[in-house]
Amino acid sequence: MLQHYVVQGSCKGCLFFASSIGLLFRRPISTHRLASLREICFRALSTRARNDSSPIQFMNAWYTNEYGSNIVLEFGSQPLPRLRKATDVLVRVHSASVNPIDFRMRSGYGETLLNVWRKMENTDEFPLILGRDFSGEVVKTGRMARRFTEGEQVWGTPSIISGGTHSEYVVASQDEISLKPSNWTHIEAASLPYVACTVWTALVSRAGLNRNNCQDKHVLVLGGSGGIGNFAIQLLKAWGACVTSTCSADAIELVAGIGADHVVDYNDSNVKKDLESLGGFDVILDPFGGQVGEKFTSLLSKWKGAVFVTLAPPVLSKTDDLGAGLGLLSAGQSFTSSALQKALCSGSLVSWGFFSPNGPALDYVGSLCQSGMIKPIVQEIFPFSKTDDAYAKLELGHARGKIVINVADDEIAKLKHPV
Image 1 (spheres, rainbow, N blue to C red):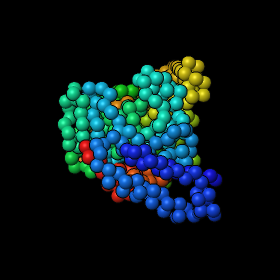
Image 2 (cartoon, rainbow, N blue to C red; image 1 turned 120 degrees about the vertical axis):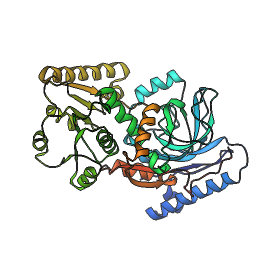
Image 3 (cartoon, rainbow, N blue to C red; image 1 turned 90 degrees about the vertical axis):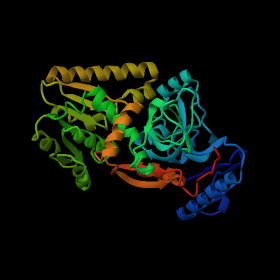
């Protein structure tokens, strides 16, 4: 298979491009040799940048100029993101996590609606820097960004079109970030903001749960070993809910260890029967969507206003397939049909949950982290220079917590920029 790697230089924009490793060496090259060549490229780029004393204008980033598989990911120099609004904050990224939305967007997921949004905001589609959450340090603030000052340690989730976090710097609104828990490292902190904000939308905004009304609630969290699942379990237990979760057999100990009251192997042929034996659920949280989650909707408590929340609604996929107009209509019809069916048959509701940046939610979650009620679950840490390997790892599935990229401390890819 033809493989290519792009390593773009620093401020002067020099470009190294090897369109085919085989052509360079005139013979097949081993995976080990390919990795070594990539490492040499990273070292060369970093050395050049360290010797450049000009004011910072560029940064290292992982990006793509087209949609496709992991091979479209490129590493190189990109312009430093600028403050577009008076409430924006420029952050030096220390660590970032990889979420399923990253490899889906790399493949073109959501491009139709996102391009409508980009047109409204006058931003370009490419180059596309991925990454949805970060932990880092404030280096510059807009004139109206008064919540944070230079040097403060923060974590957050910029909006999807604001720029990605798989880069050395990112710009976010002050309302999208929060002070990092002081007892968490940047690696630990980077694992949480995206899943925290997504779960907050699902459980608080859609299901109506909060710390004052969970004591008599029974909640089913599907996929408890992944990032969404393990944070949802911990938040619900902090609020006093009874939590049941599903996962594979080899993750049962992990999921039980973070507080789930009941854990069921989703590969067991009797999984639905086992869940039914636990009684009806007041809330079901479904990170997967489609038939995976829908088969559990009958487990909702009858005529008690129970809520099924899916975090994988068909809006983006429908608009990608049918265009913005027809796609929204088709997604709306499927939602209305599903919601009405559940309401008429059992008095329950079906709701869609979407990721939404939420600085105040991170303020509250941070306090739980500070007190030890929320703990970081990090499956693996990758150096910044191997971010593409982190994507490949996550894409294999069977997550056990979060995959995190160590951006600031990667000796291969690090650039020392004077700020």
